Image (cartoon, rainbow, N blue to C red; front, side):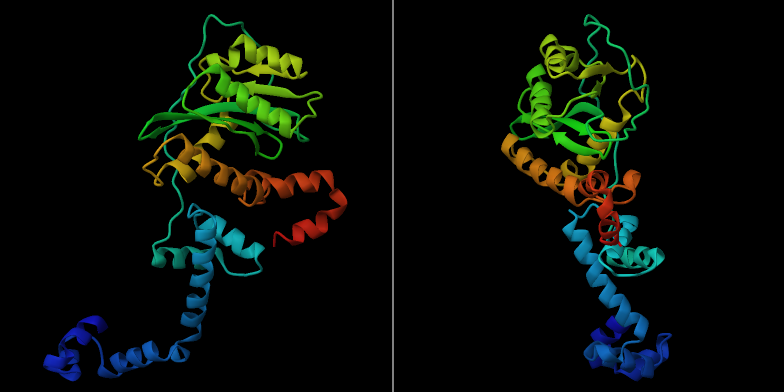
Length: 302
């Protein structure tokens, strides 16, 4: 209503307009004084304004993918104590929303002629230490120059991404490149299980031989089981939601590779993950390796 009065006050005057609209002239004039002097705003309005700036900062710093819950968690980590419902209210007012996951399309096709490997995981994607269980899967991205494919290897203990090559071709070497990246980053493979679905890339002779050579026990999900590789599919779902959807159009493999690099770095070092206690994977692993430093590390999360 105040904007309507602003637009027509020169022609009709404030008081005549207020006689028609359900607003008192004093209310209008007070609103205009508060616009010119923010110190006249009520305490709640001033706090909302300050919190809105912090919320905007957190949302933009985290790739604009956080919803109210994760923004609230991150504000707490930064020492800004606020009720979650307040964050929800302000984000609605500001029009800020988190990324919403969509349906994932499978890119690995079962190879019925390949050797049958056992499912050593049986949907239990938990680990008590790093390098106990890796899960692997791949996905695709449509670009101006054709489809680009991305493979991931994820450590189940912390959900840390340890391998992620990008390629123009959907071939067995793509999955093998991801494995080689993971082996370079995590050379300790004692008692390590590698789990995937029954895609031909993961059942290829070169791939299974490389696993055996590295001393890794291969595990493959059961046929027709929608949850046989759920953890890897969850990470890919986050990747598609937080990177691919809404950030196009994608020009080509270099464009996808750069943005994937940036996202993996953020995901591994700063993104809050609910399954590991609303902390980044790097902090979760640091707590495992240096438990005596836990109080200081946990304090940094509040």
